[in-house]
Each structure stands twice: as C-alpha cells, then as structure tokens.
Length: 370
Ligand SMILES: [Zn+2]
Image (tube, rainbow, N blue to C red; front, side):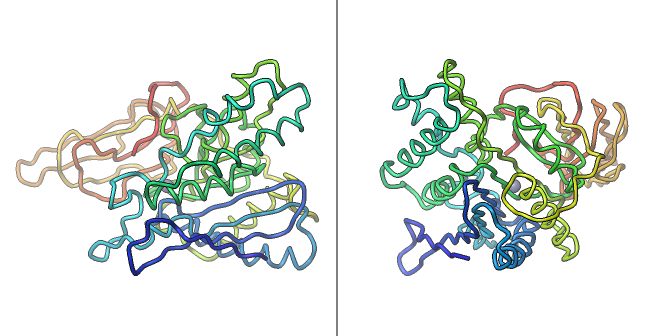
C-alpha cells in the first residue's frame, strides 16, 4: 500500500488540509473509489475502512491484478464543517457551493487538441484520451479556491480509471445508484450485489457531478469524433449506500465484499468470488423521478416506509400545522420505488420530502436536486 498525501491550496494561514489517496496493487486496469464527497455522508467512509483493510490483505496475498486507489475522506474541507455540533457537509460554508457539482469539463478541454488524432484503434484512443485528460488537468492555471483545488485532485486520480465508484448516501434511503444508461448492463451486477432498490439513469443530469465528470467525456468525445472508435472507457457510478445513519459494521463489511467482488468481475482482483445474485432492481430514467414537496409548513409524518414500491395515488406523507389545524396529505403522482425521504420532520418551502423512482420520464433539464 502506498499513501499519497496532497496538500490543498488556499489553506487559512496557520492551518493545512490534506487529501490522502491509498494505492494498492498494479496492473493494466485501474479502479478508483472515493467516500464521503458530501462530508457528512458517512456510510461510504465506514465502507472505505473495510475496503482498506481487505485491500491490504488482498495485496499481501498477491491477488490484485490491477491498481486500486481508495480515498476514504474525499472531502476534508466539509469534514471539518461543524456548526454548533451539527455536521454541514453538503455545501462549502465559505462559498455555498455543493461539493459534488461543477467538476471540470474534460471533454471540452481536450477535444480541440484531439482533432485528427483519433482513429479506429479503440485501445490506442483510450490511451491518447487519458493522456490528454491528465495533461489538461496538469496545465490548468492554479486553482482559485481550496474547493476547486480539491475537485481537481479528485478528478486527476479518477479520470484515467476504468472503474470509478463515488460512495454517497441520502438522508433516509434505500441503496441506489446513479449512472449513464450506456453502462447499465455492467452496473446491473453491482446493483444486484449491494441489493439496490433502484438505479437512476441519465446521460447528463445537468450538475457536472463527479461520476459524470468521469464517464461523460467519453460520450462527448464519441459525438465529436464519430469516425473514431471511442468506447465509454470509464465506468463511473454514484453509489448511495442507504441513509445517513447506516454505519453498522456488519453492513459495511457486506458492502465492501460486494464492491470487491464487482472489482474482481471487472478484472482487478484474482480468485474465487461469489457470482452476482440473479435478482436485481430495475434501471429507470432519472427523468422519471418524482420529487414531492410539502404544500405548507408544519410537522411531517411519513405514511410509507422508505424502500417501498408505491402506486400512483398512494399517500406518502402528511403535513400538520399545529396552530391552524391544517392537515395536508401528499400522494405519489407516479408509481415506483420510494427510494429516499427527508431526515428532518419539519416541512420547509421548496424543500423535497420524498422521492419516487418512476419508469416514465416526467422531468427534464437539471435533474439533480441541490
Ligand atoms: Zn452525496
């Protein structure tokens, strides 16, 4: 195991933050796994602890056939953001920016330089594109903030990987994944292994999130250079490991084993691993996800358990105003899996309280909630 420590730029005088990358094994394939980019989403960090322990073992046994980079703390900035005892890990307090938005657009940066360079040799194109990505990131002007410096470092480690897993969680949620539709046939095995309740697929969800910053450039380049052979060479997914409280040790060990078995299937680890279960949830368009909002302020009671399949018209939650006795019941507008609910039980204007993964597209444009 090799530990690589990067010092983040723009530290406050007298302080310094580091990003630590743990590198295991070597070989022609590479996987990159990071945890807790939204710093208060800790199930992924707990799984990373298990992954680190197991990868050390597997490396000592000589079973790693590829390189695996693990970043257990992808967001040391957010990890320190405590406000009166409450963790604030989703947005950088200094700028208000979501830590998982606006990653650098690699396709736009490298497309002009690749004009005339890519041909029919797929593997040669992969090498050329990855080299161009690294060069583009190396040649950027110095980052203008600590957040931008962090985002670039993460992308630098991930963009030349064959497999990228970004471990997150939702407030209270079933396990679910985000990915691009082109990669659903491969992602299906990972979804089955972690017992996902749903998989949400979109080619561009509009936020330049980390997984899409890794996977989308390949689609964009294939569109730019239709004559060239360009496969979607980076399988990237956001893996939402249930709700924020899911840090149980047994569960973390199970998820770590599921991830390792998936990496073995992708050619990164040798030996016998369990096959993926036959049963798997559906992959549905992210455009089909319904976000349900409260009609007025008040205390919230959920009427369905998270993870349940609900029909259109099912009552999902009620909002009660304790002063004027107003009671409103909010129903699902679409049939699908109730895969995430808000943790707070107080209804606020404009803040979603439940998400249902439907099959039929009902939204377009920017698909991710901030
Ligand atoms: Zn997250």
